[in-house]
Image 1 (cartoon, rainbow, N blue to C red):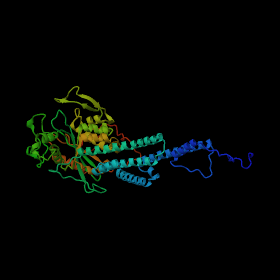
Image 2 (tube, rainbow, N blue to C red):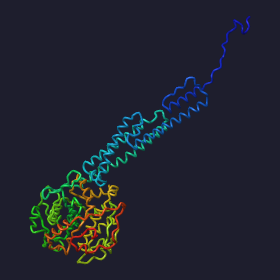
Image 3 (cartoon, rainbow, N blue to C red):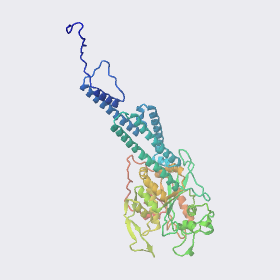
Amino acid sequence: MTERGEPGAPHRRAQLPRASRPSTTDDAVSSSEADDGAGSRRARPAGATATGPRTHLRSRSAVRETRAHEVRRALLLTTMSAIVPGLGLTLTRRRKLGAVLLGFSVILFVVLAWLLTRGGIMHGAARLLSTRGLLFMLFVCVVGGLIWLGGILATYAETSGRRWPNQTKWMHRLFTAVLCMVIAVPAAVATNYVWVTKGTLGHVFVPRYKGRDAVQHTPVAGSDPWKSVPRINMLFLGSDAGADRTGVRTDSIMVASIDTHTGDTTLVSIPRNLEHVPIPTSNPLHKIYPNGFYCPNRGTGHECLMDALWTEAGTNYPTLFPKDEKNPGLDTTREVVSDIVGMPIDYTVVIDLAGFQKLVDAMGGVYVNVPAGGIAIGGRIVNGEIVPGSITGRVPGGYRKLNGYQALWYSRSRVENSDDDRTRRQRCMVNSLINQANPFTMITKFTDVMSVARQSITMDIPQDHLDAFATLVNRMKKGDMRSVNLSYPTIASGNPDFAKIRALIKAAIDRPHTAKKPKSATTSTSPTTPSTSTPSSTASANPISDTASSC
């Protein structure tokens, strides 16, 4: 027999103690957490050993912290690309693509800022409203918007963790979608504005008929577009068409003769009731009225007055004019006015009086000095007497801000006054609108102004000359504004002295320029309140007067 432990006894392997280690399940959880957070496995240092639950908890905490850092970085970079196209992308692996997007957007912004601010905000707006300017704006809105959105989406794709939990992924997607909407909606609205503006200006700017009296003084390219044009003459017509009238009646006729170098402007209001107005021999209507526009045989109330000339040519005798002449009434009115004032008419602006009301509202109103006692709203005269109850209201007297409705009646009411008073108020209104035109207000009310323009305004100013006219308006603000009064007793409407009319206009134009004092550094958002004195009839009786002093 052999004893245990002696040679020959069965051999038993000594059992060595095993080092304690985490369970397989814990290993899997820890490894999974690390993969989700960092996106790659981290190798355990040589010789390191797990220490049980404490190491496991520390590993989960580190993973959460790493993931939170990645999410914060993703949101930050995506936001940066929403603020500046491609900026966030420059801090990812696709930094070259981000640099290209960023560089393109910077160049686009610099060009746009240069176009908008060179020469002032009014010049910039006029420049962008030209044909090329609108095409450039379409390019900026469409291409620039797509590049912006592309930068946001590319940044999202580069920063999103592929092993993030679904909840985190959807949060990042939603955040990116919101940023895209913040960019896409304004870009779409801006594109629509540009497209609507392009269509509107196509209705506003109409070509002038080139068959007769088509000579125009046009600006040229350069720092001073009016260098070779000493003076231009613009005709402003307020048309008063209605359901109760046949054709168009020119309720307001005004010529502005502008010195393009000093900005001095001479306003001439043509009385609407002038008789015997001369019709140029080149106009087909001259065959019917060789001795002037006069037709007493039609009876009282149907005399051939100046304001009926548009209807006479365009409605009563349209077949006399060439077939390619689209608006013989307007063309005839312009040619007759040119003959009356003794100067060529370079440009014509026609505004429907209902549109004038909307335009003033779109501009935020206008400040004028209303005569004491106010101005009647409405009113009708029969047999020389005001029909009781026909006056429906009043524009209050004093210096005040008028809305569009009040401004319209301030400019056209004559039931209690003469045509002289009305034409004076019309000149005052033009003076106020020019001096108070605020580019920032026009921009904020842009859609309203465009809507009014499409419906109510036409002009034969070439669209690409708007920048030059912005220069002219700025000079007019610094120049003198004079008025020529052609009402009775200066001019008898029934038998007007046209030679005297031309002499008065020439005398007003030849008056020397008065340099204005520079404005103080302190600016005001509203016009300076003038004297509260009522506009007197003295200025109206004087054939030539300063427009502002007569208001």
